[in-house]
Image (spheres, rainbow, N blue to C red):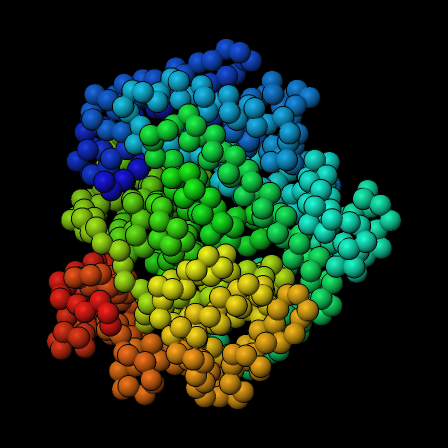
Length: 627
């Protein structure tokens, strides 16, 4: 069943108007299936030992009356969600940043006292609500400023505390965890020193590598779009030169290895916390859908290893809710696609969530994105007005339907799709390269979002490739990044040998983290330009540069003129017109992101179609899925 969740209750009791019958009638008419409440430890236990669910029970009774479901967002760890009496106790351990050596008011995920309180909290909620047939799902808020499965960043309900994006592992328990990780991995101080190029005399000297935040580069792309073409070309050449220098900065294998080990520990620590929450939640909610809320865009500094978190969720028959939807389809697509790809590979489920508050016109886009990514539904904040949004400060009439409700009703018919999208192209995210140079992720996202205008694609990272994810794809596209783990290289090579096709620009060289040897001249890529065969597969190298590489990718994938020795696939798109397409077993779904009508020639139909502005069009067709 499709899940359309509306945020209803933040901190404290809901507005009285949100408990009136007509508000719930509006929810039903709009097509909402459930309402969400922030159910947080502070609210149910303001005084130690005095448990009180009175902030939530009236809403639950109203939902039951109107045959709607409830989604409690169960939060413990962020400052607003943790009772004052606990924060003042000896068992409270705040996370501390390395940049300033200052504590936040968010609990450290390494706090050894916290797990028992998490379990107690989940048990209390389960005992009160689990057996009342009211839960559509539960959602877990395990860390961060709002509750996502990330380290502290920006924002929050009460911002009277130290918080920023940074390295949040400065407390004594985090440092001890890192020391234990390093010694367990290398077994002795002597081997560790050899691997890292360090001279630690005893375990107490083991320390983090020098960590500095790089400036955010995403601001460059809007500037680039406005530059004159000659200036843009020169700027890109300089940028590429600087990126090559930056990519090669950590030349010594021992330096690279120390960084990679740190990132492995930093991400796996959050993954361990994720697994504890999911395992415990499943213990008390054995037959309920469970969602882990995660956020950010996947940079190591945030701690969200998207594919790993998805794999852990699948282990406990749980799903993921990713908080990156905007009003722009390209952004929404690229920031959530790794989760979508991982969910379909690990065979679990997910929901999308808007980062702020979507404009009403974004509803068709969100439905298109939901259906074409294989999501079970989506979470929204303004289909029915709930007052002033605490994040964006936008205000909506309490309990009344918005224009978003009108757009939702118009597009509900598209939610009946039940088949999985057919996607044959994957873009590679090299986790190791991103760890050493986070700017690479922004570069891949920027290019991948543009490429989506021409073909449908998935994102696959080193975790997924190591688990065999490439088997379902015909093409693997390389956009940026040079370093990878040996196991990744072996999987890619074997996949090509079995018939896969790599498409890569000539400037990409691939090196292994351990040893640092370049591998492309010897094993994978042809030198210069051209096509190379490897057993049953191929490597095709783009000889040019710039935006034309994206056109080159599309030409190679569709292969309409049969210039390449592989079968062509169905060309459902391929134009820079703001229209996006996804193939299903017996249908093609199009979304026109423009405000005005678009006439589009569709080759496989041998006709021109018309798509109204900001709307979805579905074309039934008998499609050969082997293409």
